[in-house]
Image 1 (cartoon, rainbow, N blue to C red):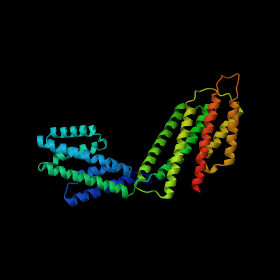
Image 2 (tube, rainbow, N blue to C red):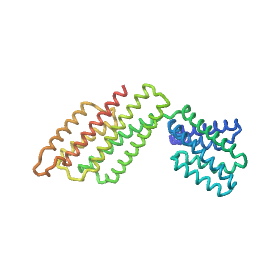
Image 3 (cartoon, one colour):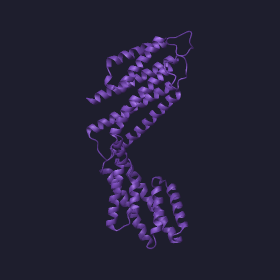
Image 4 (cartoon, rainbow, N blue to C red):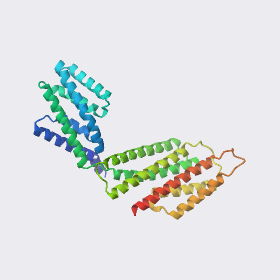
Length: 346
């Protein structure tokens, strides 16, 4: 198992495509009779997570490389192959690219600029145009490889993340709720809750980034009906998971106060949350009738908690009301996720 994971990490799609782009680029340059090193540098840095990113950054990297090549030719003409030439070529390339907003091409332009100095001795203009040609080859080959060879597909990873997020969010909710109503163990420290909450947010952000990648990719590879349906399903459920994360954050940041529920009421709340968490961990366990029964109990307790209490502070937003409101909101969102999952599997 570990060996297969290691093999996947060593030979992922992007690694394979980078190697292929380097091979094809160097092969074309050798065939034409141009030095391949600059084309290879460009090809390596042009392989991006999506075709859209490769094209977008390629448009920036070409003029940036031209700027770097121009500075290399200019300063070697003035100072020859010397330390001041390397320094000034790198310095002016960085400054110019930065001022022109060519940030995506700054690295490859600087590398091209300093690498050219050692190989240019005569025919400055000829060398300059060769560098533009090799840069163009590197950009085109890597973009075409990224587009047609093992095109990026993040659907499976997104789906895995969403399923894991649903389970982890359920676990987080159970720990927080037991801690809030005083039923948690002493080992359930707030630092652990905060760590889990932060981890969930990072995973949500990473999954959202993958969704954007997949959306960009769809501009160049038309999605079939099934893939499009999967993509829409993932978008909706990731939005729902963010809403659950928001409500859990409200529970975490609620001022710590002792709730006024009886032991039986607290036990009922814990039992309802455990049922909900079971649905989140194991969607196959979901039963609409059991779900409606749990929601009805929560609603009854919610309206009961909103009744005026002369012994309590004159506020509608008591800890009990806040907890029940957040739980009902989470219940409603989880129900939407589980229903959409059942409909999707049909």
